[in-house]
Image (cartoon, rainbow, N blue to C red; front, side, top):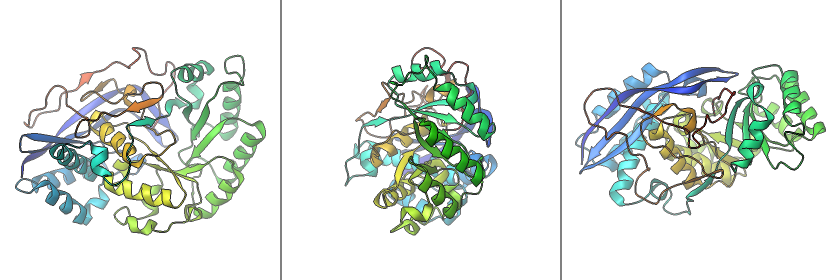
Length: 397
């Protein structure tokens, strides 16, 4: 039986301001959500980011107050069922994600299961997840950065494009891949994220030039300002690499009705890949269902964080383990935070290793009390002891 539930605010500074074609930010602000029952506590993170498709900070806070007030006296299964039946949460996906994470963390702890095994009991979750490195805005990245990340074990490197003109982006990509800094033998793929910066003609011309130049493009995310299925399909037919939908996904279908994806043909979306942010899609189980429907339709899936605290990154990584997509996921974001709420999952040799213990893996630091004060954060150092990307501005993953 749930005894108490609540949420506490936090503010976490970033090491650099995040920049993209949709804007940027210098800190992550949100709430640590907690639910207690039978001597155990489950945690979630509500860190809304409207540019990525979530509600506003004010709307999230109001939703958390309403949702947490209804939990005491219910069992965890009833709380999850009530959350599923609450249609109002479709307008507040970050709040719904946070509360579901807390309930799922608590439920999996009670059952002695890792969160990924709790989410996918009938499949084969994975504990070792390949991830991409997030290098930041293209204009701030140097050839040495690619060489360094390759040496650290990353084989897919993500870059923000669209901040400058397509012509400037192309020139920067060409310069980035020139010897002697980057030789022909450097086995990396570039994952470009345009954040909806380009017109159809701009995207088409850029893709044609990338093909002609034989640059190692792994994929392009959100290439179009107006991403209609027809335009995306035309570009995807031209591109030999996947195009992907990301922040335009929440508006593309009702996130509370994943059945709309039943029998989906990849041509319906016009792309070969979906980038899934559970905090923007309204929760772990909704995102898992969407991923399964997409994979069954032949669409690739990448799970990506919203640069959340450790309380949000742990369940997002566990979700990626449950989905078990073979391509690198967008989860190597912990080192961009200068402070955090607990130890975060960090990659080694280009992979995250998830623990076998029960729950999501998140433990607050220091142990959180259940008063109404601000959640304490602790300064953290990058796992290497160095700035994760000297001279570059990180951008939304």
